Image (cartoon, rainbow, N blue to C red; front, side):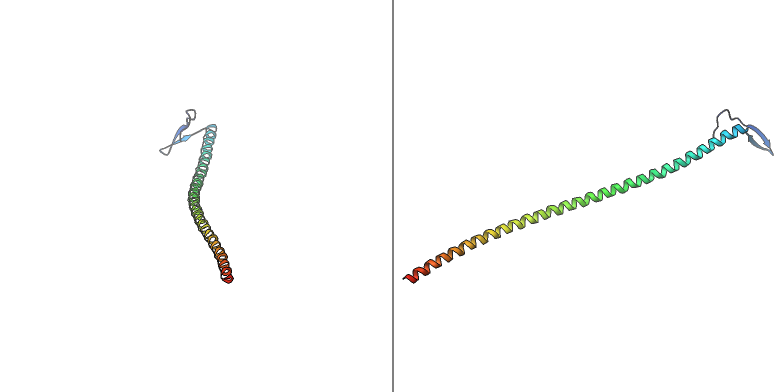
Length: 124
């Protein structure tokens, strides 16, 4: 930890060890600096945690987006397949309707011809 040049302590030797002595004013400044650094460290830790949580949320969001895009692609493919099936069924239905109309026409024609022939045979 570094302090400004104005906080020069008195060095006192006690039992062959050096001790630094500060005035009360210097001690207050040191205490304020320490408290400020502790506070800044706690804010930094909180912000790191918050940042990591946001990164995790973004990863989850991106994963969800990819999953939903794949699901949407599958649904589009299923929709295309369903539309193709409906188109083929409509085509087959139209073909059957045309066949029935032709059969109905020929049955009516055969009925009229048989009535006419029966009338001719009876009149002779």
